[in-house]
Image (cartoon, rainbow, N blue to C red; front, side):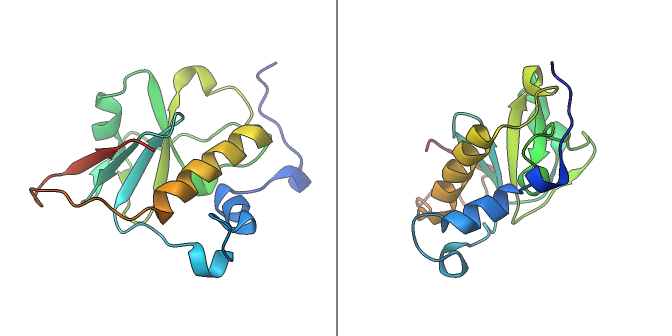
Length: 142
């Protein structure tokens, strides 16, 4: 239990799964848009956006019982790989804030689909207007 193994045929990235689903029902090529900001989403769907690149440890300092995973690096049947604490989070990427208790659990198709729907919803919803354009981050609930 907790072993992180997979077969090559089971590997699917969240971006691919979301695109095959068409996100919100539209064709993937029409509906898939990368965010211009850095989006960090926890497993319940809460989103925190960063307008500027930040090191992963900045996010993790506020979430000591979690690790970050790049959404483009997840595969069914494998553990969700950690982003190094020193790695800079990049604009246009979605990162998942994952509880440390999940670090040895292979990603299930159910969780992948759930994350894909939440990420797709975050990408397709128009941004709220925020006051104070110098704010480093904005938190939204999906």
